[in-house]
Length: 298
Ligand code: NCD
Image 1 (cartoon, protein in one colour):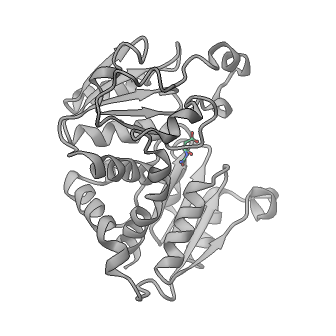
Image 2 (cartoon, helix red, strand yellow):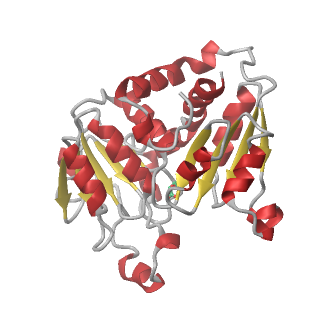
């Protein structure tokens, strides 16, 4: 395995193997430093807390080191250097790169100019494959992944985590239920691809309508920074919110996930319910990314 740009770069066997390794990785490498002497380059051109820090934590726990670009303003990109040249140069300094970039396709482009593995840490409204592995790992902790009903709620147009998760779920024959504010549904191209892959994708007007049938509810925030027209954000903001009363009719084993950050789409009163898995999901970033790093650099 080399670059991980899209969830399509991993087949079901590779995904299952990574999830299984993630589950055993803390014990497997306890007291050992399998990536000692290796350097991970973190190139983040968009804000990040979980992705950047959990990749860094994963690398440090494996005995490796991290090098941070520190953003456009302090790098030569401020002088007009292209992403391609930056990647060519950094690939001589590090052993793998995690790239987060506002443009769809940036990680793919980077992989064409890199001698070392590129891990896509999110490319605009494109994909976020490492988050998807964390999502699957979190679900698998509560229930078998095959044939589940998953609700994807929120901004499915610009939410990259939902794109890669929906594709990954096709390996497990999930029924995908989409619920989004008007104009923020799954892009037609993704919906078509999912159907070609054999997925059942059902659109709903409200989460109330489907909540009792779901095994997993995956909530996302509005990707305000990607709205071409900021006024549109105010039209749809506060159009959905998960509360304890909305969850009253849910299945006992329902798992509520969110890639975070949340803004106001989940009432904090939900946090103490047994279905709330989003903080555990964030913690799972470390073992899952340890498995990914040892896979590409080990
Ligand atoms: C997500 C992202 O960056 O796409 N965050 C994350 O990596 N956990 C979700 C988001 O920003 O809404």
